[in-house]
Image (cartoon, rainbow, N blue to C red):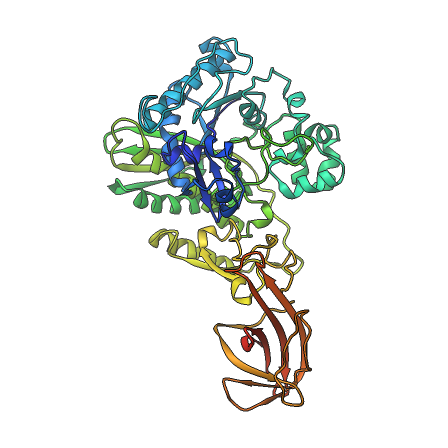
Length: 592
């Protein structure tokens, strides 16, 4: 397989000059950055403020995966002129079989040089030539005998890798290498297990002493499958240089093809995408009935000018629809002495969130959303991103599962974990999003933080399974759900039922009627005896817990905050979360 990878593609797709100090940001983290920004110490995965601290002149751009896919269409058209079997792995990366194309172009090194030149020309045509003010990338053509399989790439170009499988070829592209037939296992052996792009599994393997793919490949596949299940089988295949699924192992039945006529013809992406979402739901429902999952989807369309368009997307059906974010450090730029700590992505690789930070959703709905997302990207590329004239309005849209695998299903919790009502709600939200847009529907999500009001945020439903937004104050990132990692000063569970947007003024006194104060060490000056809220009558406190001292941002005088929280229950059965700040007591929340 040949993999064509364009480093820093989100930056290139945004149209940033190649020598600019630019970073693409999503959820307050750097998704990708330019080579000039990397030279200043910026790396994918950094928090926005840390990146700006390393490079004050850094220009921040919003992450837009649809823009990335749309901008990648001219590159796909250029590669498709060399071989018809192009698969899109994601925006900025594609693959195709090497055998036929290599024979036609005079060998694998010559093919790599030809592909690199074609991609460079497509990118230069989009960004302008070397003399353009936007800074086209310089191209060193190299020679067919270059052992790395193509010319070295400067700013904003591409890298080509060739190996036995798509996974190995993708890593070979990061190193610009041509792996001889049968040599993928040896090529992968020294790479860390983090390149499997499964952070939780990689962390466990490292703790078990399996730090490299070579260590993993040396174990019997049956033992890995017994210990780790399907993830172990996948890891064993990839570490051995094979694809995750046997290629062409199973062809889907012909009746799984779904199609729709667009009448009137659609010349807008949102109109065509609404039809695509309906087709994706129908296709996933058919696959569900047969216990199958689609790993390679062919998207076909016809235009009112008689043109037929076709593109193949390969993806992991278990991956949630996501704006790609970082998973870990960079194997090409990791510091010496840190084996096993890098991800598989190269220095220009967008960062993925760990699986623990992707919220669970209905599997069928998630699969349909992933499929519809790819179709929307492709339609956007066809209608607005192609080079030359536009193809015209779309009159016919077809989705074909080009490759399917058995759906392994999932193990639910002992008490279920999913309800029919929840699945209906997810489908209803998806339909509303299709009509009003992805930003029109929001879902409440938990996140890390010390304040009860800061631990709940509203995010677009399409992002709810992607990431947990960063908390407003520094602290450990939440894993899975907020609170999985302790926050110093955080009030322990259970969480209050009602949190006031504006705290209510209160008074707390001891048995002698003196206001309860807290000293510099966070200790109460007296035992809470009575509480009065909003100047109403006094109520006796029957029990209390705390205090919890919060001392935040002591290094920043402008943002420094010091307060104490106290839980109190009255003899009337009410339970309050009280806060002492600025010398005054407040009611922050109420417990049921």
